[in-house]
Length: 166
Image 1 (cartoon, rainbow, N blue to C red):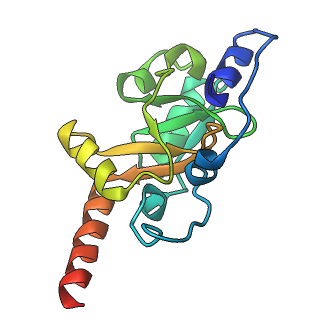
Image 2: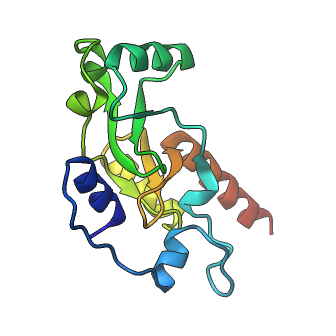
């Protein structure tokens, strides 16, 4: 079971939850430095924006809506107290009853990727599904930030231009 799922179960009241132990893939998934072949390849971590708006499951929708509008965004990532992604709140859900909690209105299963995924692969995924962005998390489910398709495309086109000049 992933840490993200374990934290969500805990928030729902479950008490006997088990987590896995980290390994080599977790090192990569955490976006930690690498060497050797492919180390210079652009990855999701290279284009991520860490300043993604966030909120907590116990926050009131009315309060969150005001913060989101003030920041000029269309949603926020729902986190627990240690930064693990539990959901995403956007669109019509933000317009629901202002007294509701974020937990009642959020999408509890947003798609996430790991920091080590090649940027070209992520960009292709976003293009095929016509998505503007995707959340980037560690293997433990902690938020790294948001990767926007336009930024990824810009980075990849710049990388291709550099290769042509070399």
